[in-house]
Length: 85
Image 1 (cartoon, rainbow, N blue to C red):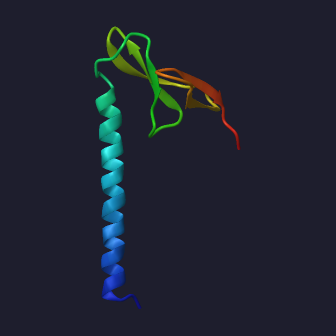
Image 2: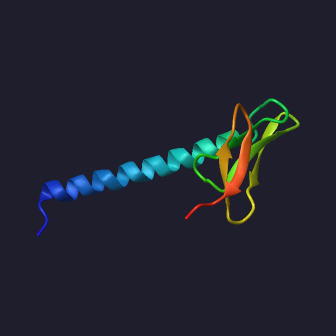
């Protein structure tokens, strides 16, 4: 039914997707607690519903209101805008 090449290719694709997922989570977690400039904000590029805000020199995670997504709107500034369907 499936050739050996198809099975191996499928396994490599699954492993690649898993690696991307792990890297994305690690990068998002690394931003939390990282030193930053007071008041700066940046969208979480792996979760469009959240962003990081600098409080007392450290990034903390915040969420946009339900139905809104984060959009970068300039240097270290974000906006939560209504999601378009």
